[in-house]
Image 1 (cartoon, rainbow, N blue to C red):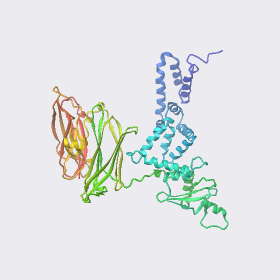
Image 2: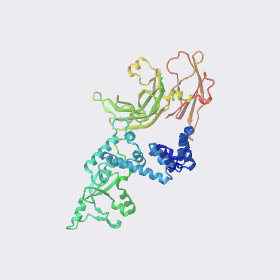
Image 3: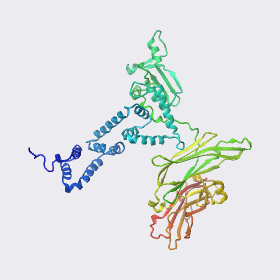
Image 4: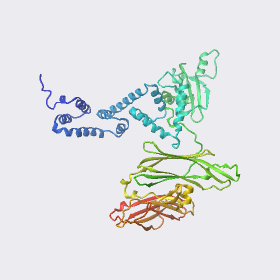
Length: 580
């Protein structure tokens, strides 16, 4: 037997796994020299350390050769090393796109094999964008549930409630169409009426059709009038019983027909649209309701009229690398309804509900708080420009990315204000730069030293560093009102006597008619010293007395015990506020 073809460095000497990798390289267009190097590195013990770097560099070059769209598909649609390598080994963009499409078709076919998967796919298809559906299909089965959980949370119209009103309404509609529009024909679990019902809900009216669309005839002659009965024409009577129009005052009209008398109702074109543009309607008909007005595919939940209110959040360092986050609300009293006091006709009640929720980066709820507010006021009290100020505090948040949701519902007017798209990033204390070793400037309505009477009556609300700091949500002050400020300093260096010394520079900038911010006056400054036995958190506070206008208050702090600190490492913070 001749062994000439199986020399020491012959690819035939590779093991099964290496043979597959060799064939993959060959398919990917590796040069003869690259194939020789792969074989050399795997069959020469002294060169074995080079094989991993060769493998990585080869596929890195293939990845870098992809265009931007292909790289996006690679990252968002492929989830395992096998599919990554297969994708990179394909010779051109057209083949790679076909590979993705074929993989998606395969994933979809696997999903719709079960009854539950079929219902899930065709219901979500009505709401998902093309990109979302592609992503969902390409996810491993083990990750789909978590991805879908987060997708539904992002659709929740009020994150502060336990119930996801959007999903609740959607699930009810799907359950309805499975009962009333279920079909054993076609690919979908329901007919075309089910698609429209899921998207738009119950129609305002259901009317008889004034024509019947016959798809078997030519486009110029496929409308059969149903308004005038021809004596003895059973065909017309039958067409009438198998056609109807759903009317939505907001979304328009949809005509459905049971074309084959088998209970499967299909969407038919509207005659007016046909007369205006036959080609466009025929194209619309060909897609049926799988693409019905996707821009309006949101399930609407009625929360009443909006109630806008200012709110903001404060964040402070805690010991142990955690944060205290305080969420401040300012409810405009004049926009709330009042309830008469049955015991005193001269008095009235304000009654409303406040809710706060905080989610972590994986959209798991880490904070949930809710309170009903009942405040008695004189019935004829002038409520203009007055705010009911409240605060929610969480003092155990670890560094990370958070979303804060806040809502207010008035029990009288049923108005609600919802804010649910505010992000908070809390960085680890040990990794922050000097600029961040200072809290943001808190613009307050009033600041005073907390006494025992206040603590006994209100507990710890608004208390920070033994001070009562009443927030001014929105940072909007009335003309003539003093703007008060507070901020904290962290990790100042101590001198040989354990004392702390700093220089604070204060800048006030105002907004000109040209929408530019310029210095209002020369910067003010002060030297601040703290003894070795200083108790509590270090802070700066003061007041600003300014005329009407829009301002930025900027504070720079130099640590005088750290002369080696570079200029760009000084502590600085700023806050915008308005005197109206």
